[in-house]
Length: 363
Ligand code: ZN
Image (tube, rainbow, N blue to C red):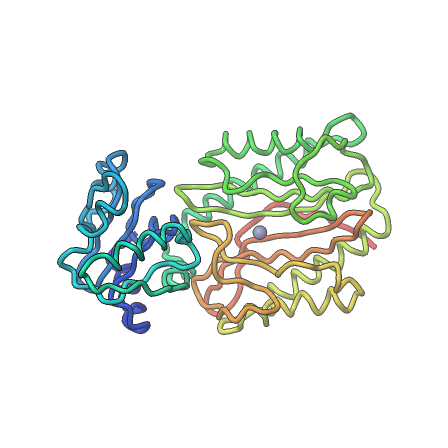
């Protein structure tokens, strides 16, 4: 992790956007740009300086993790310390992350800057650091790959032990997965485990319930692991016992849609074009209205980040980007099928990273 490289890229983008200073408050951006993974603090970055402002709980950690930064110790209310933080930097336009900074914090900062003779104006900015984060460095790919390996192993292991019609409930399966993920090295979980069976599987983000696992029903499992902040994201749909015709048909369509995206997506396409490969197949099969979410999303320090693969996404897909491909079909009252793999764009093409087993469904 070369923080100086990341700062260089950020400053380049700042100059393109004519921003002479940026206040970073969004946690993953803060972590990415500084190496500091504490849960509280601000970065203030200008062409010539990089300051990490955090309180006494984190000062020692910040000094260790962020040698490229000057550490500024926060004490008391922001009204007290913020003028000191920007003093002497002669910032006229101070960018802030308008998709993260709270309304209250913005109001307080505005008041501070109005009161002072600093002549600093707040400028809302979005999407400054996110496109940099979307292209992964080799060390980041290594950590994501480790997280993927943990979720692959956990899903295969637990899926093989699920028993239908024996009183096992969704919550049992979810807990077994969570335990296995943690035992295998996942540091906390990036999001709650999803185990959705039968009609519950029609809800893309169902919570595990006390519903008993039954044979002949779809079971959607969506899990992630986390290694040094980096996430994986994996979904499989299984069916125990005899799958009905609907399951076979829907499963086959979703598999084909995923394969079309994996083989079709190439460098330079937009997220919308990528989404189109899978959506076309699902629409042609008559399930267009049942694929209500985008095809996928980037992952890294956040389990959902740029690039977005969806009907309206203009994000350009480039080498080094890691993202999911997760078509799904959801039928109210019956259930759903989602198959999600994580891939990397390499040499202009897609390489699939996740390796968890998929069902073989004959039609
Ligand atoms: Zn996902």
